[in-house]
Image (cartoon, rainbow, N blue to C red; front, side, top):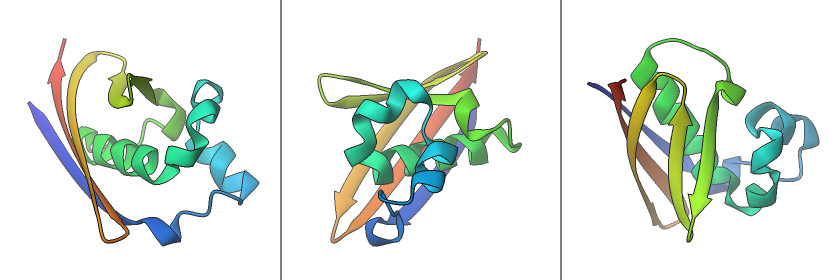
Length: 97
């Protein structure tokens, strides 16, 4: 079991910086661009759990009924996200398949 956590100040995530958005979001995630602070925190927590940098696009975030789901090859992921006072915190637990 691997665990990662990340805390993001939402104002630091510039959704208008096209290069940053391209670096963080996979094409399938562009529809959720407004949720960039959440996606960033989830991806960062996942990369911390892995202890390596497989690349931003190797970790995908999907939404089902407004609930985020982390997808990373070779792992089953459980995640939790919370928002408060302009901050987003994400916790990701990975289990090797």
